[in-house]
Figure 1 (cartoon, rainbow, N blue to C red):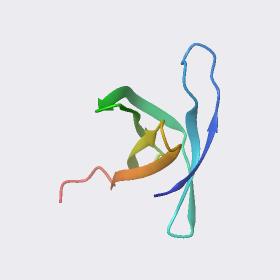
Figure 2: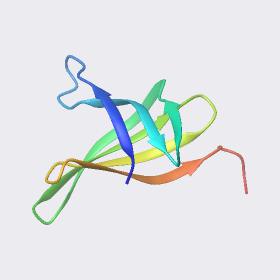
Figure 3: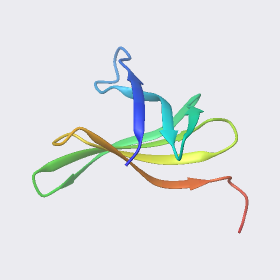
Figure 4: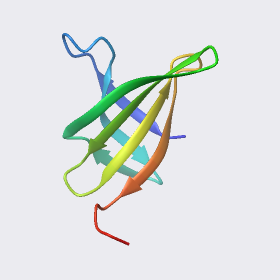
Length: 79
């Protein structure tokens, strides 16, 4: 789980992340790529592909318990 600050954007229909805190470091999100809903059973999630310019993140927002999860983090380079 991670702490995420969000902002409402007109026409998006869901708050979007602008800042994330993970392992005592704050990341400013400056680009939102793909965003899509995902339903697992009765729980609706919103998946966000986003970037701070150096690292790429996949964040999952659980609309039932209102918690954010960092699903992946990458520098975009091949391993």
